[in-house]
Image (cartoon, rainbow, N blue to C red; front, side, top):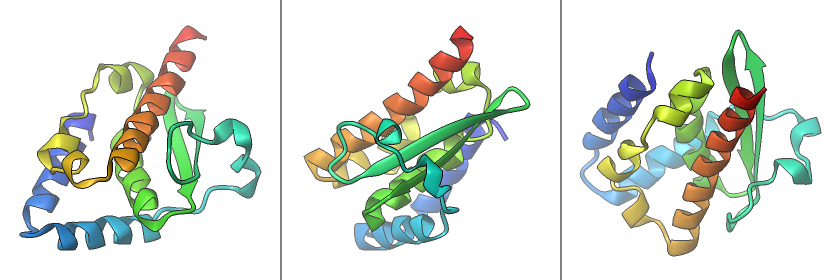
Amino acid sequence: MTIKEIQEEIIDEFSMFDDWMDRYEYIIDLGKSLPLIDASFKLDENLIKGCQSKVWLHSDLQNDKLIFTADSDAILTKGIVALLLRVFSDQKAGDILAADTNFVDEIGLKEHLSPTRANGLVSMIKQIKIYAIALQAK
């Protein structure tokens, strides 16, 4: 699936919920289903700067595509990371860099997060794009 198709799928899923408490619960459930990150990747160098919670993000290259793994010590943040990984993992670096993140606004996520969590979301997206830039530079 393309990044755009995945984002449209997420927008459709979130449109099924009428209120934000249901959406928060859905995000938390997504976090619970996030595959565990290998403990060896829980290093300071993989911590995302600018997040209120601890968020570790690691990338690997497989068949010209970036594969991300992540974890967080906060359940809601873990769900947000799960959403981002769903969109950007298993994608080519050029596609990641060309992608916009309109789904974040479409589902109303940014406006329903505290300012510090919203900053953390931006930092996570930025780090994903930095990994893609690094890959393209090789």
